[in-house]
Length: 162
Image 1 (cartoon, rainbow, N blue to C red):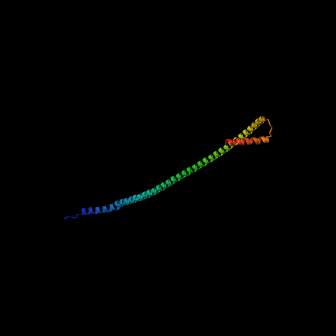
Image 2 (cartoon, rainbow, N blue to C red; image 1 turned 30 degrees about the vertical axis):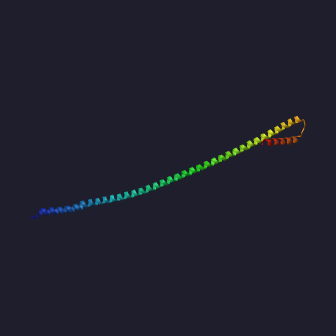
Image 3 (tube, one colour; image 1 turned 90 degrees about the vertical axis):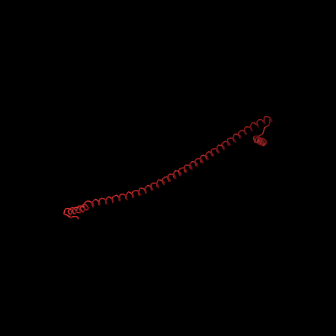
């Protein structure tokens, strides 16, 4: 069998002491550092997840804000276009109204001038006709009677033309 000698016993004792010392002074501090690193990595992962969630939430808020801004800008542009169209229609209506007024005034003025010219022509023709009739007839008629006779003549001539 095996003999137990003192060299082997001391080697085993030294080995046990070495394992205990290594465990106390080497493995425990290394395990402590490993645990601290695991904890730190876990905290960093959690922090990164929180930041990612926060960034995603902020991105959604920014997209919603941009959407709202775009809608708001679109609504403002539509309102401005509607207002411009209304102003344009108002200006067109005002210009048409002014043009119609000017045209009506022009027509009135032209009719007035025409009536005035007709009246002047009538008086001149009346005067010439009466003068010619006096010379042909060789008689004298007072001016009121001349006017009355001539009006009758013109009325009869106007009725014949119609």
